[in-house]
Image (cartoon, rainbow, N blue to C red; front, side, top):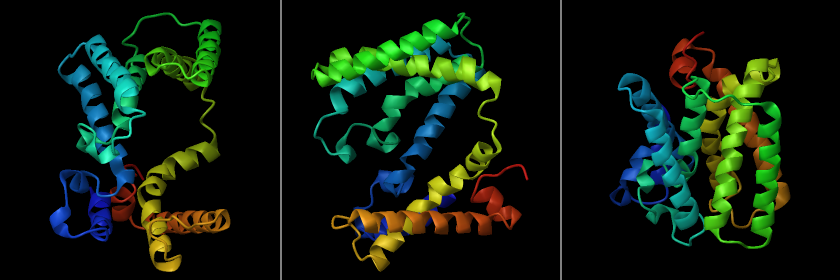
Length: 247
C-alpha cells in the first residue's frame, strides 16, 4: 500500500487527475500488477483452509480460466488496458493463477498422488519439446495450450516434490537475494523512471541505444540496492517499506 502511494504521483506525471481509473489506484504503475494478483491468489488459498473450499474446485475453475486466457487473450491485439477484468491485476493473473494454487495444494499435501522423479522429468522434456515443435509449425493455440499446461504443472511438481525437500535453494547468496527481492521489485521502477525522464530525457524510451540501456540498468540497480540498504537502517522502514516482518 505504501508503494501504491509512492507510485501515484508518477502516474499523475502521465496525465491529469481527472483521467485516473480504478487500475491507477490499485496499481498506479503497471509494474505493480503483481500485488493485487498475489493477494487474489493468497485469498483463494486461504479459502481452502478457512472455509474448506475443495481444492479440486479451484483447480478446475482456474485451469479453465488459464486455458481461455491462453487462447482468447494471449496473442490478440486488444490493448492490455482494455482486456476484461484488467483491474484485477493485468492479464498475467489469468495465466499463472492455476499454477499458483497447484503449488499451494502440492506443498500442503492436499493431493495424495505418488510422484516419481523419472516420469516427471521425462514429461517435462516431452512437453517442452512438443511446445517448441507446435510453435515452430504455427499450430493453433487450442493445441499448444495442452502441452503448455502439462509442462508448467510438471515443473511445479518437480520443484515442490524434488527440489524443495533437498534444500538446494538454501544457498546464502540466494537467500540474500530472496530477502531483498521485494524491495528491488517495488522500488527499482521509481529510479528507472526518474533517470529516463530527468537525466536521459526520454520518458518513452523509444530512442535508447543498447549502451544507454546498459548504463541505466547498472545505475538503477546500484541506486536501488543503496535505497534498500538505507531503508534497513530503521525498523519502521525495514518492516513497512521492505516487508521484513522479523528482524
